[in-house]
Image 1 (cartoon, rainbow, N blue to C red):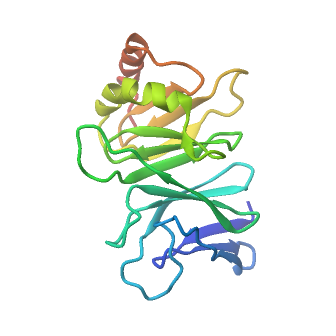
Image 2 (cartoon, rainbow, N blue to C red):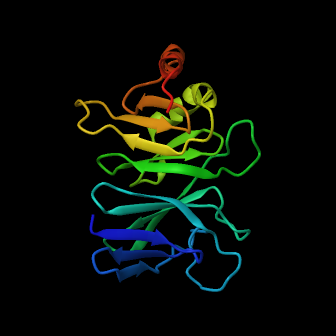
Length: 207
């Protein structure tokens, strides 16, 4: 891509032309319901937007909020790079067995750009439908099923990537920590045995 998308400590998103280092545009429209975006400079309670992910077609950018005491924790803001407006705010469910607000550690869009996979510090993944802003049916059915397998991985989930040129009817992705890799398919139900097999297959898949 010829553009670089960056976030600032003030909660702003800037689009920079790489070749000339020129600021092309900034996202300044804030969704009133979004606590994770605040473009008023100088306010000490503004959230930090990190990490970020851009859809393959360049239409969407998602930014997780780490918060700075002013709200927005446990949220992901999705912005339309074509219109330069905030599209929706995704609220993450509380992590199981924890009262802490979820903190995003990694995100990735599906190849079609219609789904966003979000990983939290508790090694829980959520899959959102971008158009509706709701959890996908796969996520509602399988997030808790695969949680025990993900909990066995060492370290936080720091990377999410989809498999290019995947066979028709499949949507495989790879989750990685500092020392483990786990493979999932968002078009397949993860039963108890299947989730356990994934964990066994991942043994030895270390950097």
